[in-house]
Image (tube, rainbow, N blue to C red; front, side, top):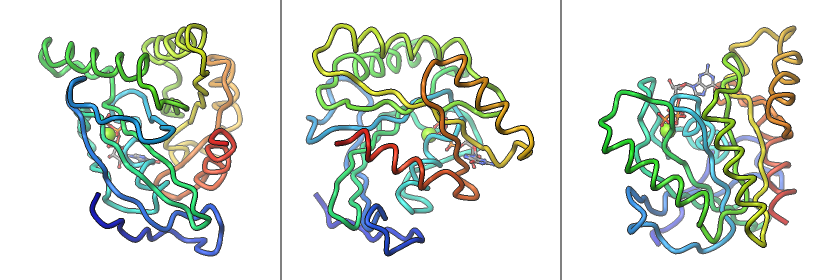
Length: 215
Ligand SMILES: Nc1nc2c(ncn2[C@@H]2O[C@H](COP(=O)(O)OP(=O)(O)OP(=O)(O)O)[C@@H](O)[C@H]2O)c(=O)[nH]1
Ligand SMILES: [Mg+2]
């Protein structure tokens, strides 16, 4: 592993503050997945929902994870490791987005296999964070992903926790946020938090939730 780089987020005195974060590896197919080295928190959701931006915000870095206004930016599973001031390490994985049609059939099939394998078989998978655009709400493929995780929970001995995150909350008027979040909660049956990778709103509560799920 190369030397961990310095994180740069604010709130530097807090124990949960991320002081170091690093890109570890990437996998485009099942055969190139690295072995699990600890409990993983995976970020899943439709293309363009803000997975990579949220990872940068969580790790207190601007460009550790590549983001783009063009859907389909992340084409592989990217593995990151972040370390908090108190020494706790987090293995964060950025999944390629789904629901983006502008790809060849074979490319989509490859991604499908990779994500399916990861969600179903990955030994280290501990938590799935499902991102949903606060303005758009839950789509059929989001529901499918939740069902998929619940099926794994039923089969496997170790449960996978699910957390739903409403992204781009800065795009919704404050007066409308509560209604948007309670709709998401009704549709997913999961705990819902909201974030903005632009303003940093919700990042601290999300870390608290991830820490609570990681013990
Ligand atoms: N206003 C606002 N824009 C955001 C936020 N998060 C992400 N974006 C924008 O949304 C676009 C997509 O962000 P990404 O983080 O690349 O999305 P992604 O889910 O990783 O997309 P794929 O890699 O295609 O699956 C970019 O233009 C971001 O700048 C947010 O919290 N607020
Ligand atoms: Mg991405």
